Amino acid sequence: MSDRLRLEQAAKLLLGVWMAGIIVAMFLVVPQYVGLGDAGRIIILHVPTAWITTVAFAVSAVYSIRYLWKRRVADDAGAVASAEVGFLFCTLATVSGMWFANIVWGTPWNWDPRETTILILLLIYAAYFALRSALDDAERRRRLSAVYNLFAAVTMPFLLFVAPRMAESTLHPNCAFIQGSHCDGIWLELNGTRVGQLGDVVLALQGVEQRGDLVVAQVEVRMPGLREVALLEPSFELASGKPADRPEFPGQQFLLAVEGVDLANGRVLLNMEAPGTGLLSNSRTFWTFMAANIGFLGLFIWLYRLRADVLLLQERLAQREVAYGLPA
Amino acid sequence: MDFLLEPAIAIYTALAVALTVWIGIFIFLWRIDSATRELRRRLDKEAPAEPPTAPHATLEARNGHTREAVSVTEPKGE
Image (tube, each protein chain N blue to C red):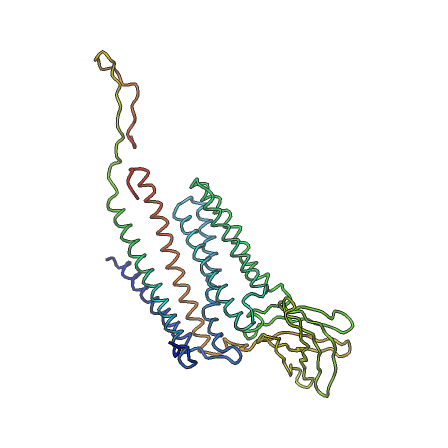
């Protein structure tokens, strides 16, 4: 056994132990969060798999560029393998997100901007695999799929990073879980735009009144599909300039908060907050999360290289069969 | 089996399930990895030095005199 092979084997064993350690930490080290309970632990799986999805699709695009440049079969195998592993991680991120959403937001699918864009991304890469399987001529298949893969990769940053941030508000972690980041919320006013949307919840401002040091907003909340309608009264403390009462959305663990007021014009800034805001500010959660990112990156590298090896071996066996009339 | 889902035990049950799934995936990947390496080694080893030859064909006249071949299948690689 060569030194390099021995090193690779040791790295794979280390990865196995590392990932097992992350699983243990996910259940026994990461603390529970008020309102989220054990659902908060899903973040340790969900976010790293989503990150590795972007890495995998980017690596796939690099291999496609190399294939178009040098026309080497190994580069095509690398592109396909990386895209397949990316697709697997993307599916894992989506399913774990749906699991979390079902517990915390009350329904597995909310058509939240980020949920919608990740679904589109999955469909774009599903089309890549469909394209490959539709073309019989190997050279043509490799060339066309490499070009398509570049187009797919161009949409990826837009779908994962830009489009969700263009949305006025989202249920997603940017707003709720990572301290320091926020969504801007929406301004509603009594004499102007009274109706707005936060995620997939429709809000209608009914009234704003001052009660001593508190400004109380009456907001009619309509859940998706008009499942439930409720009148909530979040309030804002003028002295501290911070939200006071934060009522829960019906059937969900998200809170409605008033983050700013403009009494002269009857305007209030409404936003949503989640229990467990600042999840990663806890050091145990943060380090488990970082370890999970490293572990999933290692797993991605192992998986895509293994898959590329399998694809190249399939290619060699097929050539052997054609050239020598031998069974594969 | 209900005791496995009691609040104090459930977290350990979930941990055991997750660990079992990961160990299963890891063993599966390890075996594919080994099989791939072995297959590649065998293919590298058995690659023949010379390509196989295709059959030649010679046409003969009916009266018994051998005549010049009019159709020959060239061996591969020549």
